[in-house]
Image 1 (tube, each protein chain N blue to C red):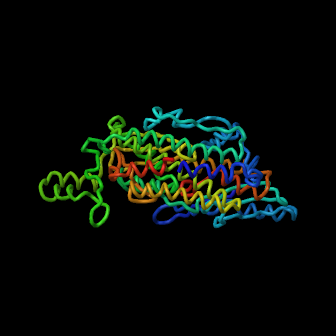
Image 2 (spheres, rainbow over the protein chains, first blue to last red):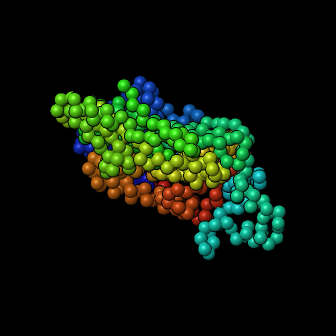
Image 3 (cartoon, each protein chain N blue to C red):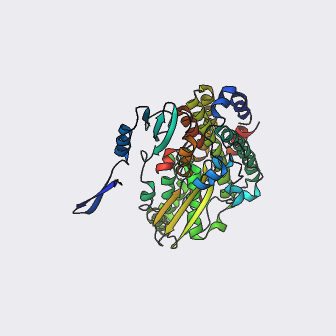
Length: 229
Length: 211
């Protein structure tokens, strides 16, 4: 991957046609980004180094070393350069992850919450590990009941609500999770960055050429699966 | 002059709202009144350059866009509503399909929220957290590659499209090795991960990301 990434620089970064199509296209300055709630590469292309991995760390991101690339061009070309640089920074984080991988459990110890079986690859494909099935079917009635209850009904989550935001490649991805204390969510709402950033499309496109609309939309990188949910 | 876009209708089951498509009639009407140079172009929802099913409604004057609007909802799947009818663990299976280019981010956001409600953030094993970060960063690379690849293709640059998807394939191969699936993994679960890494995977991860 490290070998392949420079190819994009060679192919596109200095390419005059590429630059002519992207520079000063899809312009949205910092005031516009903040007013429209744009996040991610769109916001960073306006010069604000806002990244939730730095400003509101989760999953221990504060202990990883990486930079938040920005641009001051406010255009599609700046967003393209930011994405290229973010991929290099991601590789840096991945290398740090690999150094930190220690053997250990990958599921919480609390038996009331943890999924009873880890998946394993058996002769008929991926599924519950055969050891686990042997144990619940052959040796322990209580373990079987526990498995059945947890898998079919699920665990209960205390009533309350929370908003958790992480930095997805496209911007701030937030999950508003509401529980009424049951085994099912009362409501889950996602603040998808594609949806919010897509609002900026009109501000970027109006007054420009028709062909530039496509470039501007591509620089927002909306994924409709996330926009519509 | 406002047109209700959702007209109510009484039925035996209660009031049913018929949602209609925006103020398109008004736009056409006002376009008819305007001068001949003004054209409204309905780009998409099946146009190859509109990222799936995004519908762009462009009002153009010659080659200049005077008004741009987007029509969304063509890929509405009701995922958020469906979540209310499945248990908390099954939720990951739904959220992973929302933004299908960033499945691990959807799962992580959802699971971090559920874990916060459960009050078990501190009990998540370190290995699970490190693996989540690892998968999310791999996912960031694959998502940006698709953005650059399809963005290049929309400009007419096919080489960068081929390059982008070639490198994305390296990441997806890793996902397949780790989770068993290339997309829609449902691998991050409330409480940790669905399974540990298969043996000898960290070497292949290193060789993919290494020089």
